[in-house]
Image (cartoon, rainbow, N blue to C red; front, side):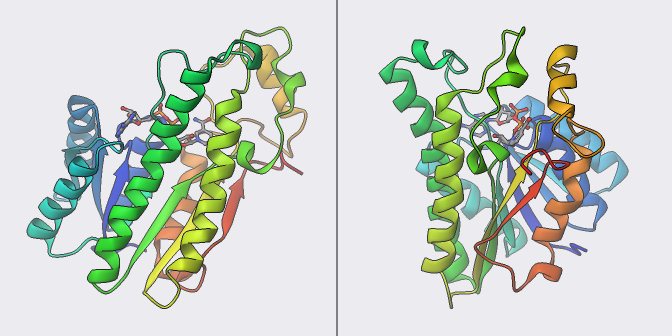
Length: 255
Ligand SMILES: NC(=O)c1ccc[n+]([C@@H]2O[C@H](COP(=O)([O-])OP(=O)(O)OC[C@H]3O[C@@H](n4cnc5c(N)ncnc54)[C@H](O)[C@@H]3O)[C@@H](O)[C@H]2O)c1
């Protein structure tokens, strides 16, 4: 579905990112594993390239640094002569991220918004500039069910977990900036969509998993692989006429 498309996945060494990169290579694309953690990105790329030679490359990228994004675009254009898509998927946060509402400092609130929402803005701005100048492109922004609905705080009962207020601001912001950008770029050959996963399994405590599953259709929390086919769909020409949309993959949690 992605024959020879050059696709940049930011945060490509992370939980979802490495599975996305693998799926891109499996569908015939070239996965650019772009991460601030270069050794981790190299490990991911090496594993993928062992299975799909020439279909994965690791590069260092800081999504909060304009020069880093521009350098990546320049390097990739020089090497491949094209970039087809970027997936805004990195997950930057500061060490105080994840506190309960009452405990969030103003400075931390601002910093986490700057890193994540600001970083996604910067990647979208720099790549859309490149795409407009080079005949088009495709931007997929990772949002979340928590950009779509208010958290169901009852599922965190009896756990140390919460749903950070910054996440609500960041993900709802990403959803709306994506619509803004899709509208802004109309007629320029660039489409912009969001993918909003439900919770992803990552060794969470049992009481939380059970409470979460009670809101779902069948499985509850999902595996990273459960999200990949929708990403591939959004990156492929099958969705050529879809722009400004948000696809939710959450086993019915938000219903
Ligand atoms: N895991 C979930 O349950 C879940 C659910 C819904 C949405 N999402 C979204 O999916 C995306 C990926 O989440 P994840 O769980 O795979 O995250 P993760 O923490 O497993 O991985 C994030 C990756 O981003 C990289 N990164 C951090 N700061 C960076 C920066 N400044 N520049 C470049 N790379 C940077 C990290 O090194 C890491 O490899 C995020 O947008 C997240 O909000 C995740």
